Length: 254
Image 1 (cartoon, rainbow, N blue to C red):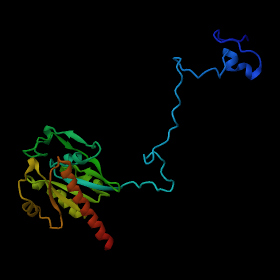
Image 2: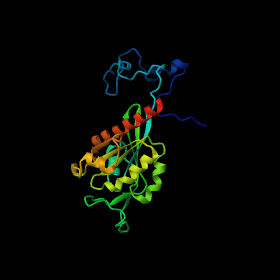
Image 3: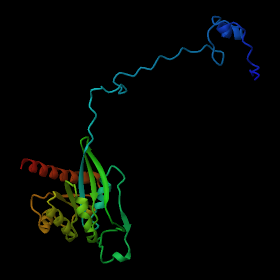
Image 4: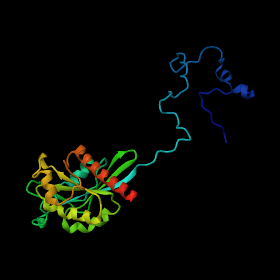
């Protein structure tokens, strides 16, 4: 097969490696002048080799340092009656986009699902809500919101499995709707906190009157919070967490 070469390249003279040098090909000597760039100007000096700054964090971690332990997962339930603000509570505090199972309310629910006269609720939770929030490097809360309608009560046992505590959300204008939730956690022996959702920033009753009406003992924390406010929800969940840790410490000593 005939060889093919580019017409721009002169034929390299014979003579082994020396014949294939730049001086032999182009008739120049490597010592005749400085190296030139594309524009005919001397090439700049190459930059110094990269050296990471001391303390910049780019240096590898010591081999003997153990990996950081993942945070401990803690399951918390957000429970209560229909239309009291459970979905809003989960959505206000969750650091991820909350998982919701909302369905449009239809005329078939008239007389069955009563969200209250002050509510503009048009959807309802038909399975559960889910969100999570990291307390610190060692603790992470996983929040499970229960459905509020009585016909979905069969799901509460499954949702409560493995939970360490619960926040029972209450509407002070409709206390009757929260009785089933309080009865459920009292029978289950699960630590819970009653959180009175301050609709429009006010309560229909004082906290002392609410405690008396709900017939809950002084050992059950009763707090006021705003389900729309992240910091307010955080404070209510910290009370639930404190209650759960208190129960766990007491059971360990027993």
